[in-house]
Length: 150
Image (cartoon, rainbow, N blue to C red; front, side, top):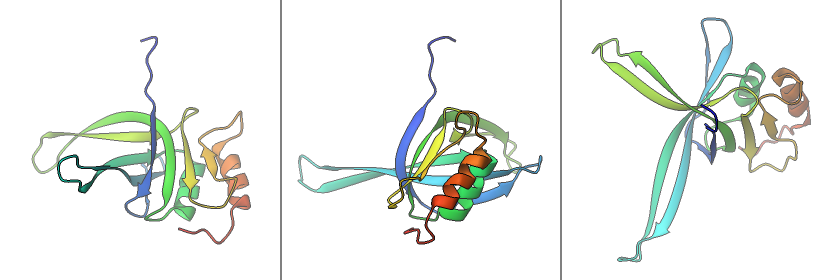
């Protein structure tokens, strides 16, 4: 369909350390749990309210998975650009179809940026003008300080 767009932009904090798994093809995948929050003042009571949404982030780019594994921990603040994808699978116990909607970071239109650090070189595109993800992440990891604050 021409004229459609599937793009998600989020800034939030990791609710747990990243989970790194091996796929059947031998490549690694990272799964992140990202919390985004909004707060407001209740008009009736004057009380401060807050609502948190949880998002599943999946990173397929091998080089970016290595950076995620090395530098991201629970509580880290990140900015992600990705696409919404819904997976379907069968529950082994009940035999029922299950669905999961995730933000996928893969390809040219996706990126992950670590926030809250004092580094200028903490944006990690999934691909960058012909440079492979591995080359980009190696360049970035050389520039990162050992004193990561998260």
